[in-house]
Length: 236
Ligand code: ZN
Image (cartoon, rainbow, N blue to C red; front, top):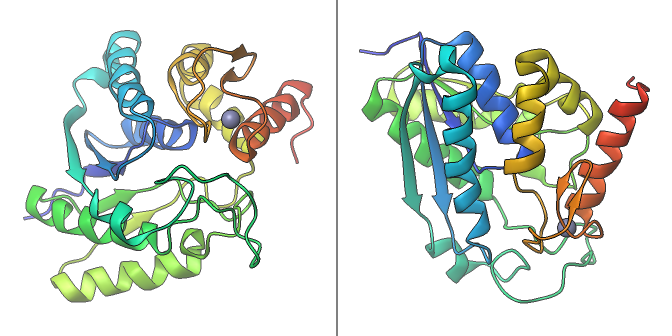
């Protein structure tokens, strides 16, 4: 039996998935989290997940009871089939087709398929992910059209109704900061600044207004410019 009051959130420990998790905790009585270990160059991402979950439990007691099991799936196999900056020590740069070299082809398709299988096992019918078309770096598996197709494939393939929610799909990074404030006020904004990780280089020593990071990689630049936009109040 499915539990329509439950959701499974794809949770990496980054700004986007932390905002999605808060959004789920606000709306669902029971929320579980799923992370993937796919040979990220930086253990820091996995540490951030644990720290975010700990801080959410402690600063939002009203959400603590809703926060259920955290699942991790080993996807080191992705490292075997991809040759990208995310999984190997090559420079982060734009490739000929305009995609950043961190691109792991079809990564979200794999994530959602495994999330669908886990959701089935856990009796959960809503999967929530932070995919976003607005600021997206050219990842075709972040487009809503792709998600719609996979949602249909999962529902057909498992003969069960299943929804993939993408609350950030049409927001830019400034609006994502605003959403965090709307959901959890300054406490949630502080957790995102102090505990979440976005930087491609895994830099955790340099702290900026918007959090830790090198400040130079595409992920840091996007996060920083979104933060500035939100702070200046010039959201669209
Ligand atoms: Zn960076």
